[in-house]
Amino acid sequence: MVSVRVWVDYVKAAAFAARSDLGVSRINQSAVHHARHLACRKRLCALEFRFIRRTMPKSKRYQPKTKRKTVESVRTLIPRAQIQRRIAEMAEEIRRDFPTEPLHLVGVLKGSVFFLTDLARQISGDISLDFIAVSSYGNRTETSGEVKLTRDLDSSIEGKTVIVVEDILDTGMTLQYLLRVFEQRKPRRIRVAVLLDKPERRIAKVRGDYVGFTIPNEFVVGYGLDYAERYRNLADVGVLTLGAKEEKS
Ligand code: IMP
Ligand code: MG
Image (cartoon, rainbow, N blue to C red; front, side):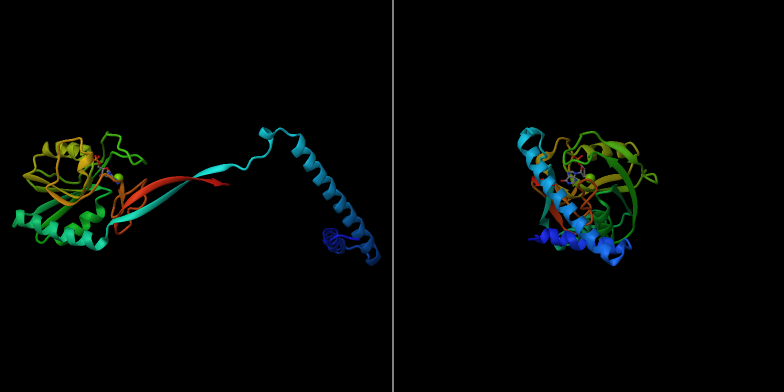
């Protein structure tokens, strides 16, 4: 009896023989020959495999690799509508404190971009914008404590009423560094607007004059805030959870 497998091989071999331009009688001969040959090779392979499995020490056998896959999730902490409502209130507070003065908003790149653009559009009257960039975080969720100026302002702040616009006040090291730099440049007044404040983590003695939301000690992303440059484009602010699970590759 020809088994199904051998039969399949027979058909394959017949097709092969046909493709190879053999005569009709030669096709049958060649096909049978191929089918037998393949079936024999398969049986030998199976035997060989069983033998290797029995004789090879366990440690040397093929082990499927396990990969550590990071599973990230974001849980909404502050929804977009709430952020927008609070920004409108902050804009009013700022204008109430400086009813007639032109205001110079200095955004700290990159985290403050969405906050700054929304805040600027809610403040009535005369305002101008500038940006500064510092780096205090690598691709991790913990600060290095070291602040570096990576992009300076375009224009002088001397004699201006400056509102420093920051995404989040965490340890306060960044803001402390920036305030030192700005104060040397003799602004008329300097105030700080932050969207989020994590007071539990504070190391430096700094505070925001205008604070959007006080949040618990969690790593947050969205609305400009990133984790390794990702999640900035989320419209809500959310808590990022990093987990790891073992996965077979
Ligand atoms: P600080 O110097 O520790 O106050 O950190 C300020 C900077 O760290 C912020 O401008 C953010 O870019 C970043 N940062 C602090 N906490 C978070 C967070 O929870 N999510 C994302 N970025 C953060
Ligand atoms: Mg950041």
